[in-house]
Length: 88
Image (cartoon, rainbow, N blue to C red; front, top):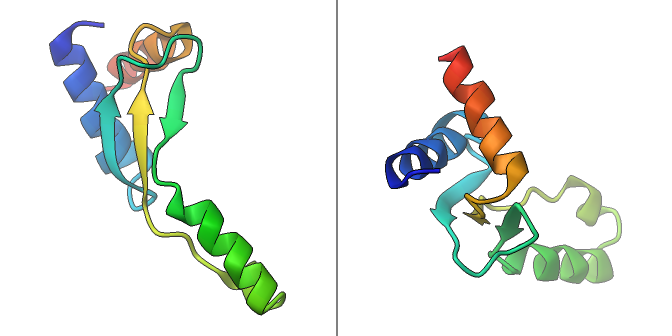
């Protein structure tokens, strides 16, 4: 994907496709084989802590918006961007 396509795709993921579920979407140069990486690690730690403290409360725990990094060279991201562009 071009730089412009990546920026447009990241904005679409953040504002439309995953609105309210992600706080930030960025391009990553460290991902090679993986299409997406969640970089906000506090979500998993918070769930484990809540489950330990209150097993019933962990079921209703809502996660804060996560941060994503995408691999613009991955075929899944390429195809998803292509479908997004076709539907706009």
